[in-house]
Image (cartoon, rainbow, N blue to C red; front, side, top):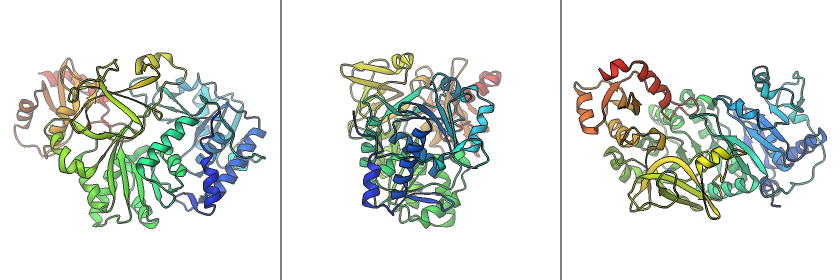
Amino acid sequence: MRPNAARGLADHARDFPDRTAILEPGGDRVSFGELDARTASIAGGLRAQGVAPGDRLLLLAPMGIPLYLALIACFRSRVTVVLVDPSAPRVHETLRRLDLRGFIGSPLAHLLRLKHRSLRGLDHYFATGFAWLPHRRLQHLAGPFDGFEDVDEDQPALLTFTTGTTGTPKVIGRTHGFLEAQARVLTGHMGLCPADVDLPTLPVFLLNSLAAGATCVLPDADLRAVGTVDPDRVIAQLQAHRCTSTSGSPAFYARLAAALQERGETLPHLQKLFTGGARVPAALLEDLVAVAPEATVEVVYGSTEAEPIATLDAREVLAETALGEREGKGSCVGRPVPGIALRIATPGAHAALPDGTIGEVIVAGDHVNPGYFEDPEADAENKLPDGERVWHRTGDTGYLDDQGRVWLVGRVAHMVGDHHPFLVEAPAEAEDFVVRAALVDVGGLAVLACQVSDPPAGWQGALQARLGVDRIVSVPRIPLDARHNAKVDRATLQAELRSAQAAVVE
């Protein structure tokens, strides 16, 4: 048996019960003392309704106080939470095999039961709002519950999903021990403490902020579409609450930085800003350093299976590595974080290649997912046993430089012939007239699609000669992922170009 991942909440409730733990945009808040008492009561209420340790409950609610009441109450009582992004492709195919016992959801989320049979006929239904729903309201559940139940070593606390961009989403099982290890690495590296006021944009990151005792301000934004976030509302929160820390995607911060620069304002109280999830342009980092002059601005490299892997300070990018990116050396994401083992290996192997040699990035450690949930085929494809250690294949290609920094050159699956995407995309985007560039295979040709603005005459021929690709084409827009609005949606771009292949190859 091992301690419950949520047990640290009791320490915060004892040490500073009246301090705000979570603050919603509308002003609703919950203190650490209230969070402890209410999650204990809900845990008892779940048990009284027949929810047993080990049961799996789907949790589908927006980022808010009810979401974290449910999460922590389930952790306390050894109930496994299943978190999904309903916009992810084919996720309900996976839900059917998870043997769900119940569903906790917002009123809108419960409407999904009309569409997906995997959500019907469960034993338990709970709603996070609106009494008119014919289900018990989560906040009204109550029952005696003392403390935090210890858990089995391998019992999952949380089941989450990979993005599913290359097929059916895979299930990531995070045990209580895994969550504790991840919290140690994240809070240790991010330097969060009870004195911090944090504005996180990812649900799991907020859990780590709570574990550190920080006050969490929930962003006043629809995080399902970060490319359309109203920056003024978020900036108002950062200023009003004197936030000291924040984390989010490059697209999220691009909107904030542009608005701040237009207003001629900065965020002098911000001490830490973390961004990642996609390649972060040097121009954005320059803007962030300007609008958060007292902050440490860091690029964080990681994945659903391993977060974080490596980090890099923006000032090091601007002083040194940005030049290498423009010259076609790849995208530097920094040095591995403490607690993680990282190698560059031949894809499918775990023996380390010499520094400077391009290969696949593989990682291992306590906060690296050692295996997918009941999915031996995915394990065989993505995990590399090595004695007592299991290496995770990130699917990213890159190399280590002589300072121990990781440089990414693209995804294994996105190579086109001998071309690594980042080695041609970044130099193209260094041109003032190229808004975004993406390399894809079109009929066996290495085609670089460029979204441009006021390009000079003859730009395609000159760029093609310099980069060595087969074709360069101009497109009105390069599609991005729906979730973060930051990664190129290569499958959609490839399909669009293939449909116009005659024009591409003529």
